[in-house]
Image (cartoon, rainbow, N blue to C red):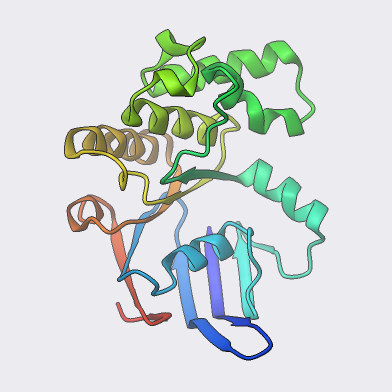
Length: 221
């Protein structure tokens, strides 16, 4: 499902050159749940952003579901992301002025779907994460665990084949973190969704199929 070949990422300023990723080669199978771990600043989020086509590598090739992405235009990349990928962030990235239902509908606004279809898909996604009774609440009225479940609903509303999760349990206590992890495991096991998760939590990583470790921008395991 995901193939990274000889990925390098360099950030340059007028005086400094920083090598964030160096010679990353990674294959993620369809239906696999992969964890990425490593110390702060080792390149985990950079790698996830490259997989998610939010950032381009300085060198190397990224293929998702056999699609070569290197030469796609910004418009083509946006369309591909919206169709294939779902994103979950540590800080939720919900819009506080929008109700829960409207937050979850957001990715569907970029598709040719009717308002009724968007609403039905959003309700279905919220039911999957156990929040069908919070449709008209605002994010400020929710707990951290509930906000993350809304973020998961938003990530899955378009039925993506791949979910990319950046520290999805990082801001949660252990009980809420386990609830969120259970939802991700169910999506992977019951629906076959491919998931790549960045985490600092070894216990969470052990629940996934495979663990990749980064150190100083290089893959060490």
